[in-house]
Length: 194
Image (cartoon, rainbow, N blue to C red; front, side, top):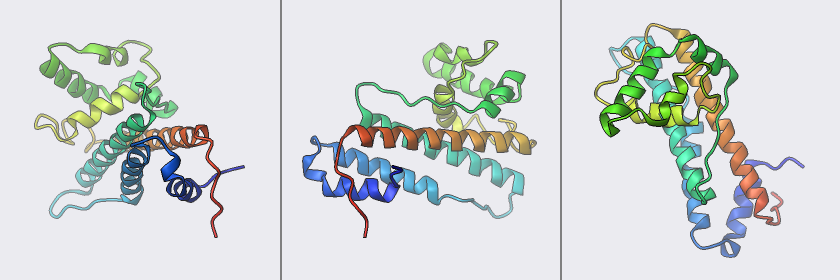
């Protein structure tokens, strides 16, 4: 039986008192973030080119999706991490399409921690297929002073923008699947919607 998002939320509300302390609040924070991401369709800036505006839309969406990941990981507890796979993005990452983005992400990590850390797994060939760490670190530099849509190579390439948006959507899909799996593990009686 396929369960809908509406059924999940109706069930969580109805079962609020049966959930462990803090669980409903953590789920509600996740819901507010995921609803925000779903409602974000585009952004427009006055006196800025369409490619620049589109680039910042993609970066904003990726950043907001990462907040969904963080909210879900808080709900999951036990240090559980969401894994993100996107074959199309991965193929282009392997070909060097995102070298500018990787350079910014790794240099930001080096400045912040003095080392590149686990980001090096994206610089090896073949790079790690789980893109979750890359998404997290890309979000961290999205609004950093050293990064612009141009310096990340997004304004000059519709393909890069589309692939990065695809990565945001793949991350969103991974989060939604993991949330549904978490919900099913709660073994709650699913509310029937009227």
